[in-house]
Amino acid sequence: MLEISIFLVIVIVFGIIPMIIYSKQEKKVTENSKPNSIFAIITMLIIFVNLYFAFIVSQASIGFILGKVFALPLIIIGLFSLSKKSRNWKSIFNILFYTGLIILIGSLGNILQDV
Image (cartoon, rainbow, N blue to C red; front, side, top):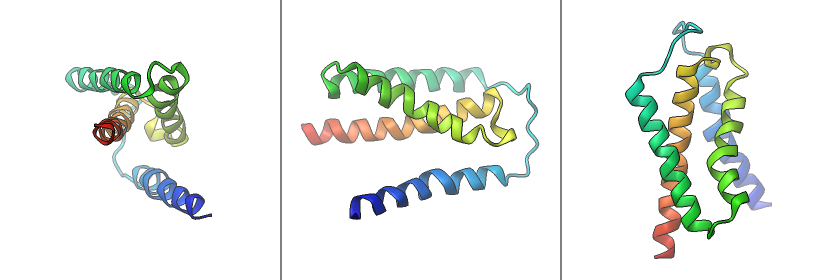
């Protein structure tokens, strides 16, 4: 029961509250806004680093790699896409960047724990 309550707190703190804050922003975002090319390259590099670290941690388990590196960010993008403001490429890359950064920190923690 404790694990379920901790999971719910994590989902609320890192999922629902940022989504509410993000949806309350007063900035008008056009649908044609494109991400900065350097930011997009850095985001893709973070995804590739996450892919490499997931490969190291999981000993080549395809399900773990696909779930951790690709499915989790897609689920979070899907949650944020419920808002009209985040249905453009700039918002998608922002969500990918921050999700990838959180996954990278978690992967580094797993690697350091194994060492």
